[in-house]
Image (cartoon, rainbow, N blue to C red; front, side, top):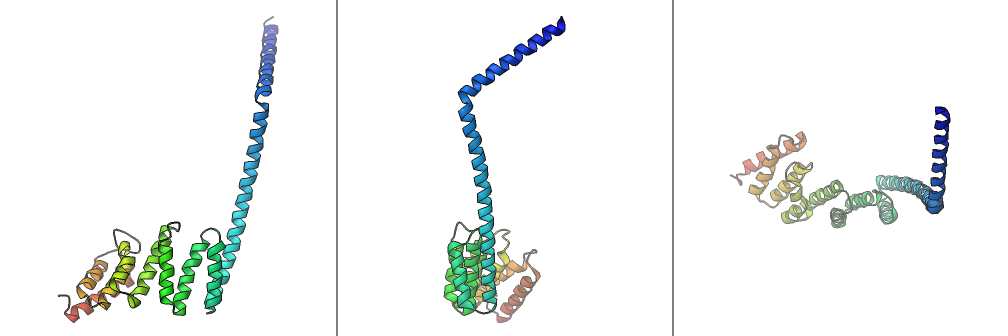
Length: 223
């Protein structure tokens, strides 16, 4: 008797669940189907976008390597054209990388003002990675040592000298050399001493700083 009761109760519960399902489906079936279709379409779209991104990145990488090869063969005008085209329609990080390499090619060609302008443009591009912007600032600063004033070098490099910035000692060296070139030995000594006092300074940079400190001391101009 108890088993019959249990069987009856299960049948009633199943019927109730079936009725509830039919009621829910009649009310929300179309919405459920629409949501399922949207999920399928969204998934397909995302996979398609991933493929498109991967394909474009691969194509941009091939173009970037081809432009690098042109530059290594001293075909500067062709390399510049290739890099500039990649700046316009490349994908991922390649447009900024192409702009950086184009600046280097301009410097190799002897167009230092053009190279400085190109590096400064990267440095001012807020969409570019911070590390790349900092490298662009530093490269512009080093080019300005020979062609610009101390103030111009400082405008590019001094922001990199603070705290534990990875490029601080290279920036200090650029500033020290710019000050030395301007015959401002007191300021040059300060920058080279900052390198010498930095235990984390690369050995080659620290050695050059010490040579400059010895040279400044021998000049007697920064007592």
